[in-house]
Amino acid sequence: MRVLDDVPELEELKNKVSSSFKEYLGYEECDVHIFENSDKNTLNDLANSSFFDRHLMEEMFIKKKPYVKSPNELCLPLECYERTLGVIYFKGNNVFEPERVSLLWAFSDQLAVRISDLQIPRHVSSNFKEKFRDISNTIFDNLKGFLEASIEKLKLLEEQNQKLAEVNQLRTELINNVSHELRTPLVSILGFSKILQRHEISEDLVHESSEQIQAAGARLSRMIDDLIQLNRVESKGWDLNLEIVDLGEIAQYAFEEFAPFNTKNKFILDLGEGDEVTKFDVEGDRKLLRQILDNLITNAIKYSPEGGEIRCSLRKQDGFIDVAIQDQGIGMLAEEKSRIFERFYRAKNDKSKNIAGLGLGLSICKDAVTALNGTIDCDSSYSEGSRFNVRFHAV
Ligand code: ADP
Image 1 (cartoon, rainbow, N blue to C red):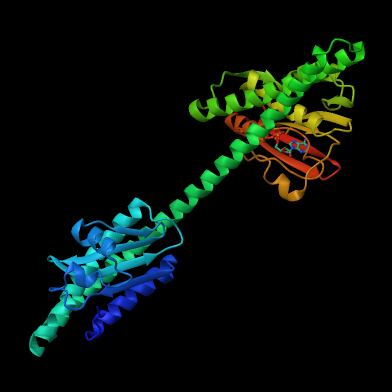
Image 2 (image 1 turned 90 degrees about the vertical axis):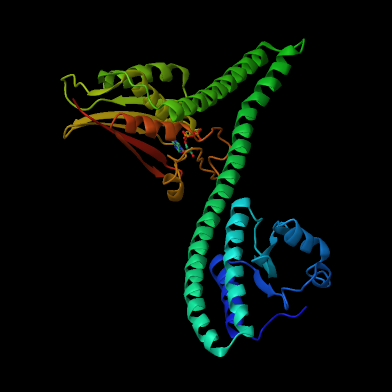
């Protein structure tokens, strides 16, 4: 079998197709093989080559199917008016998905028409050849347009595939992280309950074990609550029960609940200067506002393993209520700070890597604050502490 090269346009077409696919779509190879004597070739003649083996020929020209030589190698038949003209061969970096095969197949049909048209002039007069070339050039232009459009579409598919692959990778990482984080407190619960089963243990050990079980159970319950809430919010949105709420009162209740159980930190509620009792009224959902503050206070405690002051300050200024929750804990690196409101993001520096969590609390918090028309941001210095600033419209 010889490749036909006595029609210059054919050679030009082959090169153009081959270089376009390689250049624009990053295919490793794209070859157009055109058979000599395409009217008379038998399957036996064609199957004589090592590349075009019998199986490949049968698949393409008898069963009329694309031939997937290997996951990233694809051969398509070039056929026109029942004539077997050749084969187009692609080698890519990825598996050929069905949509891509269909697109390339449509392209190869167009290419076959063009090849067939270019081959006819070999047998006819030069006058006719001239005319034919004009017609042929028009077809070539159309084909070029089709090729460019196909390449655009393929590029889009390529990008979508890439995104899907990334999402899939992220999903696997998330499942691994979430499973790991859920398993950690469970291991604690199982370990300490085993200790409790022993016959002779001191009262101190009973006390310590049950405290550990309680703490691990609480951590587990918080994580499950976050997951459930995320699921609910993402499927149904926020179900708000709006009323006028005094944020100062909410902060006071939250502190009253946290402070007695936590002796390691010093809690300070700062409601501003002056004797007059200031109200910090906002329009909001009482339960959600409490949850936002609880979340920020829990984080302040959790990320202050060595204790320190936790200060909640409220101010009413310029038509806004500003709430700040400040700790003297481990803080964050600048690049971490910019990502903490992303779903499932967790800073993994030397100080935070052993602190458990799913990386959901702050992203839910931000959604909740936004649902109440507020804003939230964070200032933080590594090793020195963090300050979360929440702002709502005052009423
Ligand atoms: P989680 O605490 O479960 O990891 P969050 O969404 O509440 O999830 O927090 C996201 C990340 O932000 C945490 O993993 C942590 O790295 C960082 N972070 C949050 N609050 C603080 C804080 N007060 N001090 C230091 N880092 C914090």
